[in-house]
Length: 327
Image (spheres, rainbow, N blue to C red):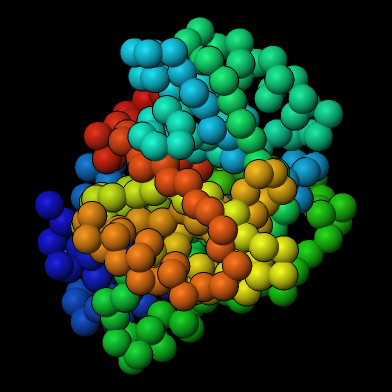
């Protein structure tokens, strides 16, 4: 179980993932050595990692897709493991409800999407059927989800090391920046010295590249911890069908909900996909019956409850922790 100080540290990193140990210590009112030890312990226990969330247009041409997979009886586990190994699969989970397996995939090129969706995924042994939705726009992503534990004063201290992205042109990303993107994707807290050594650049050049990449929003550092470790033991993917005139308003309301880790407007049989986390069944029931009920234009919803997470943001998971190595 994570301790209260552990949760405070995670909450601080959610606000400022690249904050220095000294700034984290100041915000949490503990020593820098205590913060350093706690951070190393959480990483060594495979509970926490700070990674880089790469902007879609810098990673591929075309947006991600949600994919629901129906399997033959008894085949969901083996099919999910096989599907999780696909390099295009960002997220893979065994689910109950709408489907047996849920995937989030991001194909490098639109031309490859047909092969993946029509041939490779259906060709996995045990897969009986698939259904996909194209993401048109994301209103919130996992880097925005927060544990609300810190005071306004603590948040002000951490905000000193926040980088507010101002946008970028995907065609204006140089070769050194593309190499840096790969480093930041694996380690969102990489230092200029470490990046410089890996890229064969001076520390000052690496620093300027890191700052430019973050400021332009090409990469957004984020904390990766399985929600169950934070007390959110129930996770669900909810597909909502909404009348066209209400799609934007409903999606906006869902994006502001405390449960929202990822909310997107999609093209398919659904209109909006809400990936949410809840502490328990009662909290999820309140969301479905109390929070969704007043929203206009919702005509149907389908719920897939996550039974086991195998991969999230291309990182393999095992019993709520990062897998020690790829399966």
